Image 1: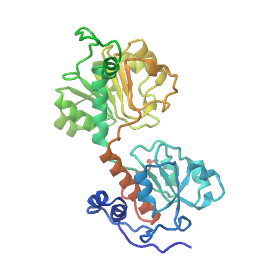
Image 2: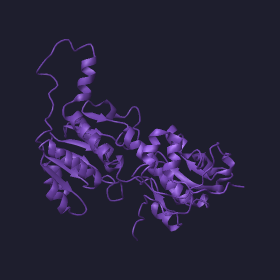
Image 3: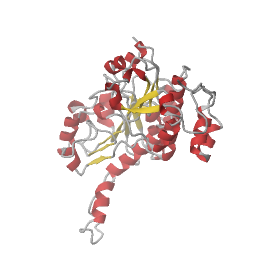
Image 4: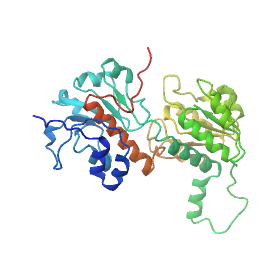
Length: 361
């Protein structure tokens, strides 16, 4: 027997859990009816079961404590799977049609993050299951990291850090470790969506001419950012720095391969803050190892993580971060709140505040 639902805002629930920090958010939160328990911790057996790729962050675990019983990913294969009412994807576990068929009671999928290439959204829509994500909130943080990677690769910051800490740095040598300038360089943005637009905005402060390639031309961005729309082949040939910000789809998988890398300048830097499979890893490894391009800076890889003996990990002209695009305290907190809002609304049978549009047939 479950406790009767009470009407509270998601913001107020989070505020009670997180104290003063949550209260700041609660003032502007949208109201949704969720299954809430009184001030004492509820019996987990009385809460809806939610499949999650545990462990989630402590903050998210606290937010969900009075809303759901979190079940480990393995529960989808165990007895009782038919009682799972929702799926919460924290990392990037695969949610496909076969899994949804094993979980007939699921009526919402909430994703921590904006990218949903690991979720079969069409299969969910066919079963009447809404999918929610966290759009908009991580654009600035991801664009910041794109520029951090670009600067790190151009000015050889990781190499310089290692050298400055090592035993060989005994005197200043102005001929050593010369890099590439970023200011004034031509920037090519592949995918001028929300994140790509933020990258282009930052480029203006560096006096960088901006080229962009996009499925649809963006006249308003051209006016506000001074960006120029060009085909991908032209962008690759003319750009000094190429930043990838496209979603992963069937069309963008291996968008950058041997042919595309061969079009780039030998002095060019490739930055990937999109998804690892947008770049053909074998082709990229050949290009940077042979110095066909100057450097690569990657927040995402394919596979992710790379095997510990992968040749990319041994190259000085490759900078890799462990998928930190949204990795700031402010952004991750808001992502947590939005993902919990989606989950709470779905469990209550209400429209999701941040839904993913199903693909058009």
